Length: 253
Image (cartoon, rainbow, N blue to C red; front, top):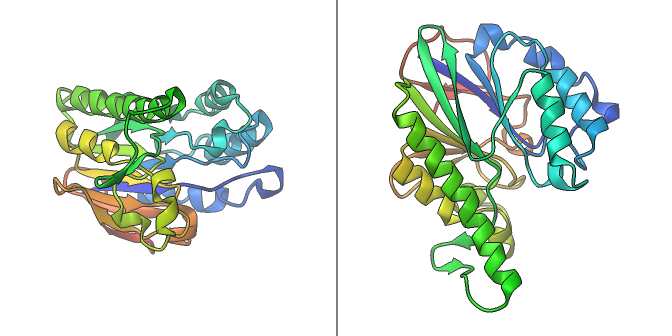
């Protein structure tokens, strides 16, 4: 069984240093990989990124992350990414990585993603240039995810996971005001997941949302925003190699 630990929206700042480290240090006994689903910092400053880096450095399991909208706020996402990578994290944007899980191989394809809404209630590439660019940016993110997933299909992985910050489905936004759903995710991400192929999709962003959802193609979607899961991380089980079970917060995906 492959064990996937995941959390998003940890929103760390200087005063939160060390709050997650004790839980993260239990990961080698409980999971094969840690996925971070964006909004790792509060304002996207290098100082905040350094706090996250100290939480995840030398954990004993691979760490794979995407950035979130908060991580872009200070307009220095490249610096944030570099700091996290220096701490050993694989930070993805339209890219894929394969990490070991015992004798198994876990493939993770990642993008921040973007908004735009869902089928029947979504933005279109029409009208003002700024509106067209809004939708085109969301499409570029989804295209990058699709390409990364297709690369993993040829990489002999035992499990493929799509990691995003924005949601690919409306299911996991249940609890959020419907008026803001277009700013929380896009159906384009779900299309990329269904056509690219994945065993699990993990995202954050929707603090008042719901944990469980599914794409129209049957891929399980999990909202792992920390306010939703209510703890340092959840562990999801996928068929394949890897280690045995552990303690609380573990469940089949």
